[in-house]
Structures are given as structure tokens and as C-alpha cells.
Image (tube, rainbow, N blue to C red):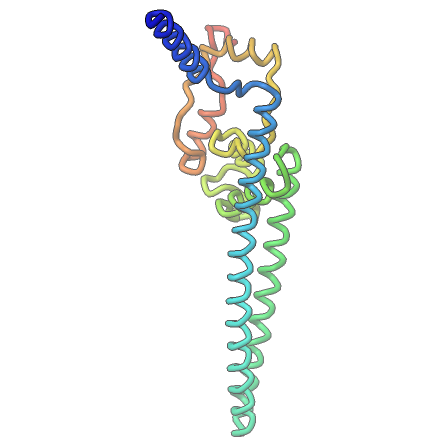
Length: 224
């Protein structure tokens, strides 16, 4: 009886260990739905934190502007009371020029954001929060070239940079997962002759490295 009991206990332990080692099936629709829900929840939390930080920054900037405006008004009033007309006029002129520069900067920002939104319209994001996060990251790496066009810091065009950004595995959580097809699987199976991919982040690549990374290598003497 003792031997039978020990054998049953051993078989039960083996079964439990096998089931535990097997782990959950992440390919099932239920698991995929759970993963999607977790990612969406994390994105929502990140968006909430970003909104709180933005509100705190905006409040601090507004208070600073109010204090600066009060100080300027007091100084201008003092100059006029003392009869220093030329200094008062110069101060008003400087203020007007500063406002023009500010409006020009706002117009430039709106133009940039419109161009980024237009290019991002071709991408499929998980949700609006993911799109805003991607937009923020992309904008931080843009600059204007000599002709006033918005390009990546490496010199790549806005469209090229967005495509590279979307292909970067580190940014995959922002986009809807692509459905694998038979054709895609065959293409992956036959891609052994392609160029090896670099692990360097897109933001650290030069424009030449980006082009090399994105261009498939020919598999034979005929170029295909």
C-alpha cells in the first residue's frame, strides 16, 4: 500500500510540474485580448501622467508670465510718471516685437504639428493616446532645414523618419499588431539573404545607416 501511495503521489507531482511548465497559451484569442487590455491600460496611465505633468508645467508658466507682465506694467507706469517718454516708447516697442516673435513661433509650431499629423495618418495606432505619444517623440527629434522644411536631425525627410520610427521594435507597443499571413510567412522564410539588421536605435543612426538598414540586399548576381 505504501508503494502504491508513493507511486500515485509521484505521478501527481509529475503531472502538476508538467502543467506548470507548459504555461498559458499566449496565442489564444483570450490571451491576446488580455495582453491588448494590459497594454491599453498602461498607455492610459502614461497618458494620465503626461497630462498631469503638462498641467503643472502650464500652471507654472502662466504664473511666471503673470508676474513678468505685472513687473513690466509697473516699470512702464514709473517711466511715464517720471517723464521718461523715450524710454517708455522703447519699452512698448520691445514688447510689440516680442509679441510678433511669439505669434511667429506659434504659427511655426502649428505648421509643424499639421505636417506630422498628416504623415502619421498613414499609421495604425492602438489608440489616440499611443498616437499622441508617438507624435511627441517624433517632434522632439525634428529640426528645420535651410529651406524651412521639417526633417529629422539626421537629415532624413519627415516621411522617411516616421516609417523608420514605425518599424523600430521599441515602438511596436504603440501600433496595432499586424496580422501574419501565409504570404508574409513565406517572405520571412525566404529572407535569409537579406541584410543583417542592426540593434542601434533609430534615433542614433546617421541617414546613411538608416538607408542601408532599410534597403534589402540582393540574393544573387541578378539582384533578386
